[in-house]
Length: 527
Image (tube, rainbow, N blue to C red; front, side, top):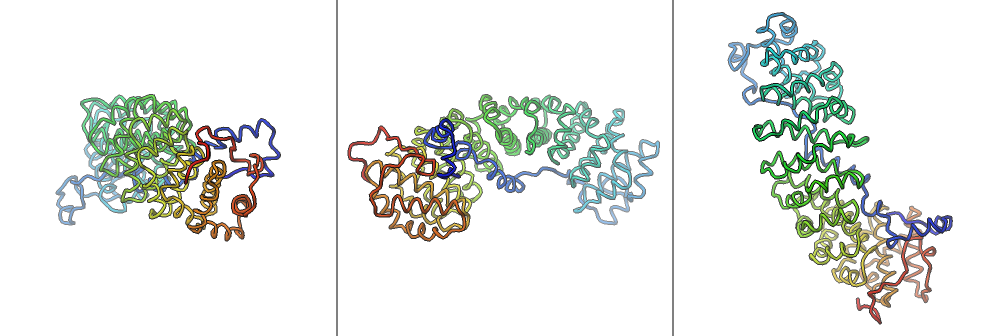
């Protein structure tokens, strides 16, 4: 949470300077959102949580013994790759089906399927041609399956399918009267959309979303529904750039209904889709909130299924990066007691994202901070600071500093009573200078309020007794200029032993609001 230095502040116009001090000096884009830095870590974690592409492997098509293959048992007779292309080129429908099925089986069964070999053999354009053979649905099905598995490979292998014109033909196949044929086309399109923003937008431009949503009907099979929802989630995912919101927002009413399903795969991919759609500006968040999904998402924070809990938490966390009204929607749905439990979750990534979510709530107004206090969440936050893994501790540090930026005096008292200072000050030893500055900002907020209420000596002593002052003195030789400036300022103003003078905001790093609080009783509070 970078602050403006004194030199920078003197260059601001009066109007710009006033903007800097609005809402106790908080910059909501930095304090409440912090999207770019956090989303990098989230994307890394997501690779383990959700597959972008899936290869269709039929249990009945597990590798057979050489004897079974030679005897033709377990499906179509064995056919080498060299034999597949000529058979697919023949005008005999039976041979074409057998060859296409052999190609599909080869791509389905092997641990490292020979995708490039199949591409180089010329199989892709023939499979795409077979997609249009509505008089032979079995051939359509096998061709779509083969293309699904080719598109499950690398970006180059997916491009081999896309560049030959597969997308519009696969979209057309979604209207097949046979569910298994349409389902295979959905799967193939999901793999293409999962390849990245360019492929995703190409699929969207082909008009796939209305066709997918049409398939979400009461008579749809569960396997089919899972594939449809997974494909929808892939159409909503990826940033730089995100999908055109006008193209994907039509799925929101369907996602709201899908949150009521009990199937964990449907729930997981529905939550992933919502997490992608809320990872944007406040207008996008509002469109999701307006669908009424927040109460259902919050309920899923109690899910015992990590595959559901992870994206539900991500979506809720994204929503509280929005404005106060959007954050209130989450709080009023009962999220804070559930987040309290997640701060103690056995999985460190859940703990970290719960702390990140709390940090965004703590960046809000006094009522939102009070909701955190009222649920007894502070001891759990302190526990994360004390014993969580480093990434979780970092998010908890942000939560504390955000809290101190908007807290009332009584709320600050509650924070200090929670024994936050020892673990908070220990993070001054961090090798990450950004974390150090976050802690220094939080300490500065505490000291500033203590000075205004006549409790500076007590709070300064608390910081000194837990080793905070020693750590700050050591930081005076820090290589980072921001760290150096902040720590020198804190020591000079609050620990120099000289009488402190009333400083203007411009004199204190251009950040802190020195207006007195109305809730300070005469004589101040006892810390």
